[in-house]
Image (cartoon, rainbow, N blue to C red; front, side, top):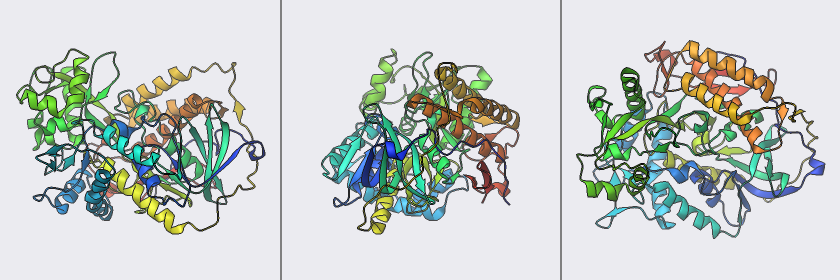
Length: 550
């Protein structure tokens, strides 16, 4: 049964433009995003085709770059594909696509092997790749690098390889505003940067790999660029989004009042760290049979309950019972980070709290990375592929980016012909109301207000009253922000965040149950009737997102 709820819809394009007055650029394949999914797609395109990678910031700024834990894959002879599949399905709480799970997990050793061939130096023990264990995994199967800086090492090797490709260009610090569509097909993008200004980029295939949305929440592990721009532009262009209620909260984010938040990898608990409340009590033993190695949704809920019970802003990671030298060797980055706050990870309790970490929902894709919009493929965190279900298993995210980046590239190449991209007779887009000095909008204050609201009302626990309040406030802000035309990324980003916040609220309100990372205080149990996906899309007859259950 479908359920439809009208939601305030954005206009098609954020800015007005006249194609006759803008520079035009051409490429065979355009990749939006510079993380592991985007670059794996770019590297999958043969050198006879032109590839352009566009990133909104420096290459070093992506969620992939900051990944600590590693990549999950069956490399231990005592492990089996069936074990990894079973762990993923169990974590996903009934919403994984079993065929997708099997496809991705069986490709894992091959994709990890590619990274090694491209120069990634994973940590080793006695000449073999070292394997760690994380929450929800029945076996040690996490390959890692530089101890706890896996993403940095992987992206170093991948970007270095990309720079050797003569057919591959990279535009850094270039903000993609919108996808260009013509006759129901994605044909390119409208892009802006301070050097080039506005420009149109035409492509025969577009790959969306823009990452996540953690910056919509006050507490997050994500870097500042994770503002859901790809989700918003895909929605405006008519692509379907799915499972937007499922934001995964990482249980252990370093909590130092007044400082930026920093992820503390799940591998710490995989190595034996305990979680204790402010009274020194180890609480996970009574919360889940796997204790500290429980899936992330269970650990985050248990931590939130302890913080509420004790009225304390954090709980604590305790590694004092573990071998100090081994811990410092295994986690050098976290050791350095904590020392800046005068904390010794081998001796001191480390204050942690949950933070928004990974948006499981996103643009709906099939097993080749095709979206519902012809001409647009997508890979990585911006997508909903069916791998993660209602709760992502640790270290399956980099794996998904690799597999889907590669599969999207293969599918694109199979369909490319000899005809190059060409400009289209796209009619000028009229400009909306311009933002000027009279508007006097403090976008920084609005952004922080939105993040605080979503943390309170769309955070680890939700209920109907809180979601209704959030919807009303986001709608209010949207009524005066979304009609305006801004002239730089600060404004466009704010509009994207408001659009995606509303989509997440709609989906969360429609899922009247608790499942995985989505916990409703007013519906605390899973409902078998809601073992479905909530889809969001704008229709031609009523250009508003409408949730439908399938």
